Amino acid sequence: MNKSSYKALVVEETEQGYVRSVKSRTVEELPAGELLVRVAYSSLNYKDALSCIGNKGVTKHYPHTPGIDAAGIVEHSGSSEFGEGDAVIVTGYDLGMNTAGGFGEYIRVPAAWALKLPTGLSMREAMIFGTAGFTAGISVSRLVERVRPDAGEVLVSGATGGVGSMSVAILSRLGYRVAAMTGKVEERVFLEGLGAGRILPRQSFQESTDRPLLQAQWAGGIDTVGGVILENLIKSIHPQGIVTCCGNVASADLHLTVYPFILRGVSLVGVDSQHCPMADRIRLWEKLADAWKPDMLSSMCTEIFLDDVDACVDRMLAGKLKGRLLVNMQS
Image (cartoon, rainbow, N blue to C red; front, side):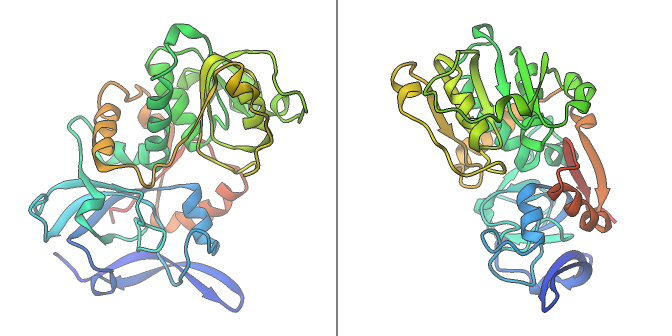
Protein backbone atom coordinates (compact mmCIF):
# COMPACT_ATOMS: atom_id res chain seq x y z
CA MET A 1 0.00 0.00 0.00
CA ASN A 2 1.38 3.34 -1.05
CA LYS A 3 -0.15 5.51 1.64
CA SER A 4 -2.12 5.24 4.85
CA SER A 5 -4.21 8.39 4.30
CA TYR A 6 -6.75 8.92 1.56
CA LYS A 7 -9.60 11.21 0.52
CA ALA A 8 -13.24 10.42 1.16
CA LEU A 9 -16.60 12.13 1.14
CA VAL A 10 -17.71 12.25 4.77
CA VAL A 11 -21.28 12.95 5.91
CA GLU A 12 -21.48 14.31 9.44
CA GLU A 13 -24.48 14.86 11.71
CA THR A 14 -24.40 18.36 13.25
CA GLU A 15 -26.82 20.60 15.11
CA GLN A 16 -27.45 22.37 11.79
CA GLY A 17 -28.21 19.12 9.96
CA TYR A 18 -26.15 16.77 7.82
CA VAL A 19 -23.01 18.25 6.31
CA ARG A 20 -21.02 16.71 3.42
CA SER A 21 -17.34 17.42 2.77
CA VAL A 22 -14.26 15.75 1.32
CA LYS A 23 -11.83 14.91 4.13
CA SER A 24 -8.64 13.02 4.74
CA ARG A 25 -9.08 9.62 6.38
CA THR A 26 -6.69 6.80 7.26
CA VAL A 27 -6.98 3.14 6.32
CA GLU A 28 -6.74 2.29 10.02
CA GLU A 29 -10.22 3.82 10.41
CA LEU A 30 -11.75 1.38 7.93
CA PRO A 31 -13.75 -1.59 9.24
CA ALA A 32 -12.40 -5.11 9.40
CA GLY A 33 -12.35 -7.22 6.26
CA GLU A 34 -10.12 -9.54 4.26
CA LEU A 35 -9.75 -7.20 1.29
CA LEU A 36 -8.28 -3.71 1.17
CA VAL A 37 -9.22 -2.22 -2.21
CA ARG A 38 -7.97 0.96 -3.87
CA VAL A 39 -11.12 2.32 -5.50
CA ALA A 40 -10.79 3.41 -9.13
CA TYR A 41 -14.46 4.17 -9.88
CA SER A 42 -17.74 4.40 -8.04
CA SER A 43 -21.17 5.71 -9.03
CA LEU A 44 -23.90 7.85 -7.53
CA ASN A 45 -27.16 6.02 -6.84
CA TYR A 46 -30.41 7.17 -5.25
CA LYS A 47 -29.59 5.19 -2.11
CA ASP A 48 -26.29 7.10 -1.87
CA ALA A 49 -28.17 10.38 -2.09
CA LEU A 50 -30.42 9.29 0.79
CA SER A 51 -27.40 8.32 2.87
CA CYS A 52 -25.91 11.75 2.14
CA ILE A 53 -28.90 13.56 3.65
CA GLY A 54 -29.11 11.48 6.82
CA ASN A 55 -31.79 8.96 5.95
CA LYS A 56 -31.62 6.58 8.91
CA GLY A 57 -33.41 3.88 6.91
CA VAL A 58 -30.23 3.67 4.82
CA THR A 59 -27.45 4.71 7.22
CA LYS A 60 -27.90 4.49 10.97
CA HIS A 61 -24.66 6.00 12.24
CA TYR A 62 -22.64 9.07 11.26
CA PRO A 63 -20.00 10.25 10.37
CA HIS A 64 -20.16 8.02 7.33
CA THR A 65 -18.77 7.62 3.81
CA PRO A 66 -21.52 6.57 1.33
CA GLY A 67 -21.05 4.79 -1.99
CA ILE A 68 -22.82 1.46 -2.55
CA ASP A 69 -20.65 0.74 -5.62
CA ALA A 70 -16.92 0.29 -6.04
CA ALA A 71 -14.53 -1.12 -8.61
CA GLY A 72 -10.83 -1.18 -7.88
CA ILE A 73 -7.60 -3.06 -7.28
CA VAL A 74 -6.90 -5.30 -4.30
CA GLU A 75 -3.91 -3.92 -2.37
CA HIS A 76 -4.02 -6.40 0.49
CA SER A 77 -5.77 -9.75 0.70
CA GLY A 78 -6.36 -12.09 3.59
CA SER A 79 -8.31 -14.45 1.35
CA SER A 80 -7.02 -17.28 -0.80
CA GLU A 81 -9.63 -16.39 -3.45
CA PHE A 82 -8.10 -12.97 -4.20
CA GLY A 83 -4.57 -11.78 -4.70
CA GLU A 84 -2.91 -8.38 -4.66
CA GLY A 85 -3.45 -6.70 -8.01
CA ASP A 86 -6.81 -8.37 -8.73
CA ALA A 87 -9.44 -6.06 -10.22
CA VAL A 88 -12.70 -6.49 -8.31
CA ILE A 89 -16.30 -5.27 -8.20
CA VAL A 90 -18.14 -4.69 -4.92
CA THR A 91 -21.82 -3.76 -4.96
CA GLY A 92 -24.64 -4.31 -2.51
CA TYR A 93 -24.41 -6.04 0.85
CA ASP A 94 -23.69 -3.31 3.44
CA LEU A 95 -21.20 -1.30 1.38
CA GLY A 96 -21.94 2.43 1.59
CA MET A 97 -24.84 1.91 3.97
CA ASN A 98 -23.27 1.30 7.37
CA THR A 99 -19.86 0.24 6.03
CA ALA A 100 -17.58 2.94 4.60
CA GLY A 101 -18.25 2.94 0.87
CA GLY A 102 -17.00 3.75 -2.58
CA PHE A 103 -16.86 7.53 -2.13
CA GLY A 104 -13.53 6.91 -0.43
CA GLU A 105 -10.29 6.12 -2.24
CA TYR A 106 -10.06 2.94 -0.17
CA ILE A 107 -12.57 0.40 1.10
CA ARG A 108 -12.04 -2.64 3.30
CA VAL A 109 -14.63 -5.38 2.94
CA PRO A 110 -15.22 -9.09 3.51
CA ALA A 111 -13.97 -11.22 0.62
CA ALA A 112 -17.50 -12.65 0.30
CA TRP A 113 -18.71 -9.25 -0.97
CA ALA A 114 -16.28 -9.07 -3.91
CA LEU A 115 -16.13 -10.67 -7.33
CA LYS A 116 -13.35 -10.56 -9.89
CA LEU A 117 -13.85 -8.22 -12.81
CA PRO A 118 -15.18 -10.32 -15.71
CA THR A 119 -13.29 -10.57 -18.98
CA GLY A 120 -14.60 -8.02 -21.45
CA LEU A 121 -15.46 -5.39 -18.84
CA SER A 122 -13.27 -2.52 -17.64
CA MET A 123 -13.55 -1.09 -14.14
CA ARG A 124 -14.97 2.07 -15.68
CA GLU A 125 -17.65 0.12 -17.55
CA ALA A 126 -18.46 -1.89 -14.43
CA MET A 127 -19.28 1.31 -12.56
CA ILE A 128 -21.27 2.76 -15.46
CA PHE A 129 -23.45 -0.27 -14.80
CA GLY A 130 -23.04 -0.16 -11.01
CA THR A 131 -25.94 -1.15 -8.78
CA ALA A 132 -28.42 0.47 -11.17
CA GLY A 133 -27.20 -1.57 -14.14
CA PHE A 134 -26.97 -4.72 -12.04
CA THR A 135 -30.54 -4.18 -10.82
CA ALA A 136 -31.65 -3.65 -14.41
CA GLY A 137 -29.86 -6.86 -15.32
CA ILE A 138 -31.73 -8.84 -12.64
CA SER A 139 -35.00 -7.32 -13.85
CA VAL A 140 -34.29 -8.24 -17.45
CA SER A 141 -33.19 -11.75 -16.48
CA ARG A 142 -36.52 -12.37 -14.77
CA LEU A 143 -38.51 -10.88 -17.63
CA VAL A 144 -36.83 -12.94 -20.36
CA GLU A 145 -37.84 -16.11 -18.49
CA ARG A 146 -41.48 -15.38 -19.37
CA VAL A 147 -41.55 -12.97 -22.30
CA ARG A 148 -40.07 -13.55 -25.76
CA PRO A 149 -38.92 -10.60 -27.90
CA ASP A 150 -41.75 -11.25 -30.39
CA ALA A 151 -44.47 -11.27 -27.70
CA GLY A 152 -45.11 -7.51 -27.86
CA GLU A 153 -43.88 -4.28 -26.33
CA VAL A 154 -42.22 -4.11 -22.94
CA LEU A 155 -42.84 -0.96 -20.90
CA VAL A 156 -40.08 0.52 -18.73
CA SER A 157 -41.07 3.19 -16.20
CA GLY A 158 -38.73 5.88 -14.92
CA ALA A 159 -36.83 5.37 -18.14
CA THR A 160 -34.36 8.26 -17.82
CA GLY A 161 -33.20 7.10 -14.38
CA GLY A 162 -30.31 4.75 -13.72
CA VAL A 163 -32.21 1.45 -13.58
CA GLY A 164 -34.73 2.55 -16.21
CA SER A 165 -32.20 3.71 -18.77
CA MET A 166 -30.12 0.57 -18.32
CA SER A 167 -33.21 -1.60 -18.69
CA VAL A 168 -34.15 0.13 -21.94
CA ALA A 169 -30.64 -0.32 -23.33
CA ILE A 170 -30.29 -4.00 -22.34
CA LEU A 171 -33.75 -4.96 -23.59
CA SER A 172 -33.10 -3.22 -26.89
CA ARG A 173 -29.75 -5.03 -27.14
CA LEU A 174 -31.63 -8.32 -26.76
CA GLY A 175 -34.11 -7.49 -29.52
CA TYR A 176 -37.15 -6.41 -27.49
CA ARG A 177 -39.48 -3.61 -28.55
CA VAL A 178 -39.34 -1.11 -25.71
CA ALA A 179 -41.73 1.67 -24.71
CA ALA A 180 -40.10 4.16 -22.34
CA MET A 181 -42.31 5.95 -19.81
CA THR A 182 -40.86 9.15 -18.38
CA GLY A 183 -41.65 12.48 -16.80
CA LYS A 184 -38.90 14.00 -18.95
CA VAL A 185 -40.32 13.77 -22.46
CA GLU A 186 -37.75 16.40 -23.48
CA GLU A 187 -35.19 13.58 -23.23
CA ARG A 188 -36.65 11.84 -26.29
CA VAL A 189 -33.33 11.87 -28.17
CA PHE A 190 -31.54 10.28 -25.19
CA LEU A 191 -34.14 7.51 -24.86
CA GLU A 192 -34.32 6.82 -28.58
CA GLY A 193 -30.53 6.54 -28.57
CA LEU A 194 -30.87 3.76 -25.98
CA GLY A 195 -33.24 1.90 -28.27
CA ALA A 196 -36.70 2.96 -27.08
CA GLY A 197 -39.26 2.63 -29.87
CA ARG A 198 -41.89 4.79 -28.16
CA ILE A 199 -41.69 7.55 -25.56
CA LEU A 200 -44.74 7.85 -23.30
CA PRO A 201 -45.43 10.68 -20.81
CA ARG A 202 -45.64 9.74 -17.15
CA GLN A 203 -48.90 11.66 -16.82
CA SER A 204 -50.73 9.06 -18.90
CA PHE A 205 -50.01 6.44 -16.20
CA GLN A 206 -50.68 8.50 -13.08
CA GLU A 207 -54.48 8.50 -13.04
CA SER A 208 -55.76 6.22 -10.30
CA THR A 209 -58.73 4.01 -11.15
CA ASP A 210 -60.84 1.51 -9.22
CA ARG A 211 -61.10 -0.73 -12.26
CA PRO A 212 -59.52 -4.10 -11.43
CA LEU A 213 -58.22 -4.55 -15.01
CA LEU A 214 -57.28 -2.24 -17.88
CA GLN A 215 -56.90 -2.98 -21.56
CA ALA A 216 -54.00 -5.37 -22.06
CA GLN A 217 -51.21 -3.46 -23.83
CA TRP A 218 -47.83 -4.76 -22.69
CA ALA A 219 -46.12 -8.14 -22.92
CA GLY A 220 -44.13 -7.25 -19.82
CA GLY A 221 -42.92 -4.36 -17.74
CA ILE A 222 -40.00 -3.17 -15.67
CA ASP A 223 -41.13 -0.69 -13.03
CA THR A 224 -38.69 1.50 -11.12
CA VAL A 225 -41.07 3.93 -9.38
CA GLY A 226 -43.96 2.10 -7.69
CA GLY A 227 -47.34 3.52 -6.66
CA VAL A 228 -50.16 4.17 -9.12
CA ILE A 229 -47.83 3.72 -12.09
CA LEU A 230 -47.04 0.17 -10.98
CA GLU A 231 -50.72 -0.51 -10.31
CA ASN A 232 -51.74 0.59 -13.80
CA LEU A 233 -48.90 -1.34 -15.40
CA ILE A 234 -49.92 -4.59 -13.68
CA LYS A 235 -53.54 -4.06 -14.75
CA SER A 236 -52.55 -3.63 -18.40
CA ILE A 237 -50.19 -6.60 -18.90
CA HIS A 238 -51.02 -9.29 -21.46
CA PRO A 239 -52.04 -12.73 -20.15
CA GLN A 240 -49.04 -14.69 -18.80
CA GLY A 241 -46.94 -11.52 -18.77
CA ILE A 242 -44.60 -10.36 -16.04
CA VAL A 243 -43.80 -7.12 -14.21
CA THR A 244 -40.66 -6.60 -12.16
CA CYS A 245 -40.48 -3.88 -9.52
CA CYS A 246 -37.48 -2.41 -7.74
CA GLY A 247 -38.35 1.14 -6.58
CA ASN A 248 -40.80 3.23 -4.60
CA VAL A 249 -39.92 6.85 -5.40
CA ALA A 250 -43.57 7.47 -6.39
CA SER A 251 -45.05 5.49 -3.50
CA ALA A 252 -44.52 2.32 -1.50
CA ASP A 253 -48.27 1.64 -1.45
CA LEU A 254 -49.95 -0.75 -3.87
CA HIS A 255 -53.74 -0.91 -4.20
CA LEU A 256 -54.84 -3.86 -6.33
CA THR A 257 -57.28 -6.73 -6.56
CA VAL A 258 -56.12 -10.26 -7.32
CA TYR A 259 -57.73 -10.19 -10.79
CA PRO A 260 -54.59 -9.44 -12.85
CA PHE A 261 -52.99 -12.46 -11.22
CA ILE A 262 -55.86 -14.98 -11.36
CA LEU A 263 -57.61 -13.89 -14.58
CA ARG A 264 -54.56 -13.07 -16.71
CA GLY A 265 -51.87 -15.04 -14.95
CA VAL A 266 -49.69 -11.94 -14.52
CA SER A 267 -46.58 -12.36 -12.37
CA LEU A 268 -45.23 -9.60 -10.13
CA VAL A 269 -41.57 -10.14 -9.25
CA GLY A 270 -39.69 -8.06 -6.72
CA VAL A 271 -36.03 -7.30 -7.46
CA ASP A 272 -33.49 -6.94 -4.66
CA SER A 273 -29.92 -6.49 -5.82
CA GLN A 274 -28.44 -5.99 -2.34
CA HIS A 275 -28.77 -9.61 -1.24
CA CYS A 276 -28.41 -11.35 -4.61
CA PRO A 277 -26.46 -14.62 -4.09
CA MET A 278 -22.86 -14.51 -5.28
CA ALA A 279 -23.28 -17.33 -7.81
CA ASP A 280 -26.10 -15.38 -9.46
CA ARG A 281 -24.04 -12.18 -9.32
CA ILE A 282 -21.16 -13.77 -11.16
CA ARG A 283 -23.40 -15.20 -13.90
CA LEU A 284 -25.17 -11.88 -14.39
CA TRP A 285 -21.98 -9.79 -14.46
CA GLU A 286 -20.62 -12.15 -17.10
CA LYS A 287 -23.69 -11.43 -19.24
CA LEU A 288 -23.33 -7.68 -18.70
CA ALA A 289 -19.70 -7.96 -19.78
CA ASP A 290 -20.62 -9.74 -22.99
CA ALA A 291 -23.95 -10.38 -24.73
CA TRP A 292 -25.93 -7.89 -22.63
CA LYS A 293 -23.50 -4.96 -22.81
CA PRO A 294 -25.15 -2.06 -24.68
CA ASP A 295 -23.17 -0.65 -27.60
CA MET A 296 -23.70 2.86 -26.27
CA LEU A 297 -22.67 2.07 -22.68
CA SER A 298 -19.95 4.73 -22.46
CA SER A 299 -22.36 7.44 -23.60
CA MET A 300 -24.92 6.56 -20.92
CA CYS A 301 -23.01 8.26 -18.11
CA THR A 302 -21.79 11.62 -16.95
CA GLU A 303 -18.33 11.35 -15.41
CA ILE A 304 -17.54 13.38 -12.32
CA PHE A 305 -14.90 13.42 -9.58
CA LEU A 306 -15.17 13.11 -5.80
CA ASP A 307 -15.35 16.88 -5.27
CA ASP A 308 -18.42 17.01 -7.56
CA VAL A 309 -20.51 14.47 -5.66
CA ASP A 310 -21.88 16.95 -3.09
CA ALA A 311 -23.64 19.13 -5.68
CA CYS A 312 -24.83 16.12 -7.68
CA VAL A 313 -26.61 14.66 -4.64
CA ASP A 314 -28.95 17.65 -4.57
CA ARG A 315 -29.55 17.42 -8.32
CA MET A 316 -30.37 13.72 -8.06
CA LEU A 317 -32.86 14.26 -5.24
CA ALA A 318 -34.48 17.04 -7.31
CA GLY A 319 -34.88 14.66 -10.27
CA LYS A 320 -32.58 16.69 -12.51
CA LEU A 321 -30.24 13.92 -13.64
CA LYS A 322 -30.51 11.30 -16.36
CA GLY A 323 -28.69 8.06 -17.05
CA ARG A 324 -25.77 7.13 -14.85
CA LEU A 325 -23.37 9.28 -12.83
CA LEU A 326 -19.87 7.76 -12.84
CA VAL A 327 -17.51 8.86 -10.06
CA ASN A 328 -13.83 8.77 -11.06
CA MET A 329 -11.94 8.17 -7.81
CA GLN A 330 -8.47 8.27 -9.35
CA SER A 331 -6.55 11.32 -8.18
